[in-house]
Image (tube, rainbow, N blue to C red; front, side, top):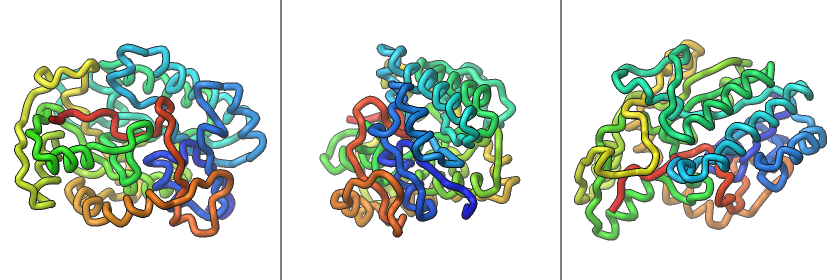
Amino acid sequence: MSDMTLAILGSAGQLGRDLAARAPAGTILLTRSDIDLSRPETIRPALEGHRPTVLVNCAAYNFVDKAEAEPDAAFAINAWGVRALAQACGTLGIRLVHFSTDYVFGLDEGNGTPWPESAAPGPVSAYGISKLAGEYAVRTFAPQHLVIRTCGLYGAWGSGGKGTNFIETMLRLAGQGKSLRVVNDQHCTPTSASDLADATLKLIELGTNGLVHATNAGATTWHDLAKEVFRSNGIAADLTPIISAEFGAPAKRPPYSVLSIARLNSLGIDMPHWTDAVAKYLNERTPRLESSKSAPHYSGTSPPHPSKPAVSPSSPRVGEVGERSEPGGG
């Protein structure tokens, strides 16, 4: 990447921080104070000022249930804001890397095999529709683009605007001795933000364009993810499987949103199995969470030691690519 100037938008969020920790020195770290996707007029001046050759967009509206009540807010960021970003990148000749979601699927409830990139999308929620619109905007207005769909993201930094992730929520509730009822009919692939960050940087280095699915390997349900977390930690939690109708979330979720990573593998990028990724996360969570509490805010150009990522409070609305909602709880 020596001939590239990389910029990361949403660098203070869950995925953005893991990307910043791995990005080359000199990477430009951008937050909402630099570019606010809900205010398109902030986009081009910032890009003209920094002039990156590659922009990785980690900023998004990611409140799945809330989007059902405020679809305009979701579309303002995930669709119209992304459209303005893609237009600016297209005009300025910047390669745009953008993240999307497994929630662009779900309409075909009979499918039970991993979705390839060639499959026709069919979202079933306002959030999913807004993200699909953003995909099309990137593909239409940014000639140099890479759209990466991922699934069930979790990381040590916590999802933007939420400050936590599914694994931490399960551990917290179990630690409080609460009974847990978690959905067991939504099939997906929990994905480590650090593994996705590694894959993203490899795709950028390879010069990959178009649409790529990137998740950890394998598949599970939210209930079985919680079960694996408790097993790995030796916790005898009171865990009960339920169906989505019992959980009663405002937004409908895909019953099967496992993404095929065959194209990613064909490019020479192998992803760890989700169980191995969870084990690694659990082994590393304590020192990383303690480090995140004391790390200073940094914006501008990445410091000489990119292993120390930027930290700043996340916006309550413009979040970052991450785990969308808690599909279970007390």
